[in-house]
Amino acid sequence: MRVLLLEDEYMLRISVTEFLEELGFEVTGFSNGDRAYEAIYETHFDLYLLDVNVPGINGFELLRTRRKEGDKTPAIFLTSMVNVNDLQEGYKSGCCDYVRKPFDLSELQLRIMHAVKSYYHGGENELDFGEGLVYDTEHFTLTYNGETIGLSKTEKEILALLLKHKNQIVSVDSFQDEIWGEYVDPANIRVQINNLRKKLPLEIIQNRRGLGYIIER
Image 1: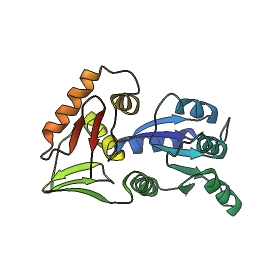
Image 2: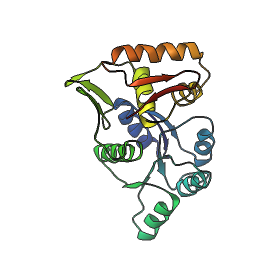
Image 3: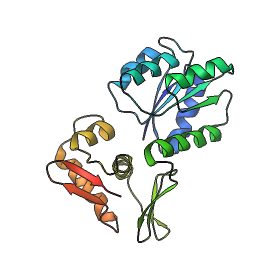
């Protein structure tokens, strides 16, 4: 899962980046709002973490602009602002949560997990596929009869993408954009997906020939 982090305080940006990467997120950090805004058009992100007062376009304006452009990616503001008017401004901009500085990284983790679970999985803690196969939406892990199924980083990302768009067909182009961020031979993508399917005890990933792949539930 890709996270865009806009934070101009260097040490905080590094601390948050390292913490989230240990949790399995892929983090791209920026100290300038203009550069972060440009990056959104170059890379797909699943979550925005935005400081407000930064060089270039501020966090409020960046998110407000993206919302007007139809971007619904969940966003959390990281800010030292405590004024009620500022909080209202943030929510009007389209954020789903606030984290007030200084904050504990474990608090940030909880708020991120809540935002991801609420937006992508309808608030469910677990997605139960039956017959003992369960996906943990907070830790992004798949278990079968209580035992964790070992997946590579790419396999985890493929599964997460399909579950994020469950009941929708995910095209090869979408896999390229949201996982690799660049052109990848479609044959290689099919190999990765087939490797994942072989590890699953149930056939939850369906192939829609010529269109893509889907998980229906």
